[in-house]
Length: 372
Image (cartoon, rainbow, N blue to C red; front, side, top):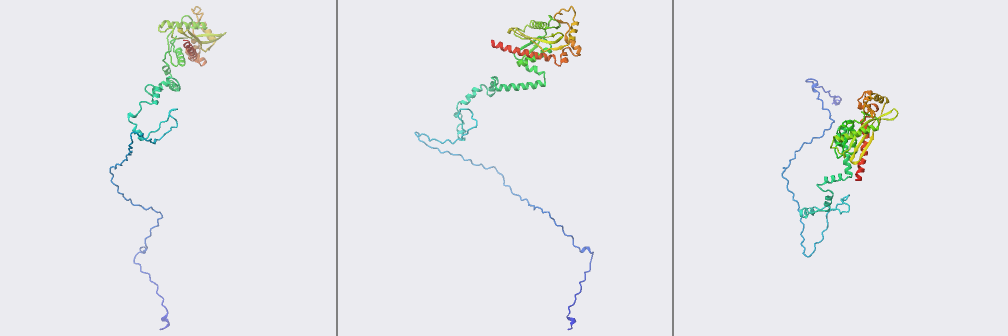
């Protein structure tokens, strides 16, 4: 064999396979992208069979059985220990009395019969002494009537309610405070005089009936000048009231109000009101003057000039009232010139004077009652 035959032969390169179709048909499809979200495994629901519900079985309740101890007739019963629970309240029910213990269920069952209950207890007897009548409301009524803290609370509550009502409706003040045993008669039918006197006496006495009747005075001038003329006119008004109204005996106090001019010094004039209270049965007669309102000397001179020379009551005053002259000068009604001139109405002046009159009258009644 020759040397050429012993050399290895070089293999032939592989030949590519012949394509039978499209070049893209031999490309494999893309693989699925990786999912990094971990999902919790879903546990399948397992149906649990429910047992059939039937009526509840009765549970036997054990009944305690107490042993019966048979004793001889002559032997005394052995002492039994007191197992009842004791309860001591923080605040005792009554000072100096023993505290009652809470009974056990066995004792409660044994003592619930009517025969075992006592006829009366000291506590119930004491409550009966404190609360005679129907019960707690009767006791509260007695406590209020006898005085003390309950009475003050009731009066404070009533005063608060009355204040609220009169604030919402001022006309209710007369209705709420009317009544009582005190009757005051005003010798006038004008509300400008009746209203302040009513309010003053109702404030002093709590409740009072204040009425007014028309009363005339013909012994003085229409505009009295001086205290003496005003007092004479007030006394005549009181006498006229008692003569016309026979039901007003001497035990009924009558109040008269009379306005007049007062000259304190030369050409210093003031318009004032005189209040006179008369109760002959007790010998009471009170006289009180209101605060004065300054009057210009020119207004007094005009009233004097307007009075005729032959005027019947020229010595006691003028025939023209100072209210008509001042009202015309200030261009206000004749009964509002005080407020237009000074800012204080005549009603306020009369109310302040009437409060002093009512307070003095109340003191005299207390002294008269103490003497009798």
